[in-house]
Image (cartoon, rainbow, N blue to C red; front, side):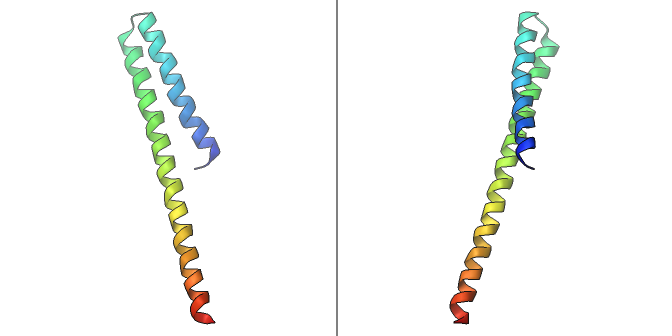
Length: 75
């Protein structure tokens, strides 16, 4: 996932807020629930994206550490 996914997740969350607000304005409970669900889905996507980014960074850090140790023992 990349920048496009982050934008999509945030727009889903914001769209959900709009939908929920419109549901409140029109007293449409189903639309309010859909809006809340969209917000939750967008937030979940953001959390998943953050976890993926952290896992990738951890992998890069571990590889760099091994490379550094390899260089140290090679000399």
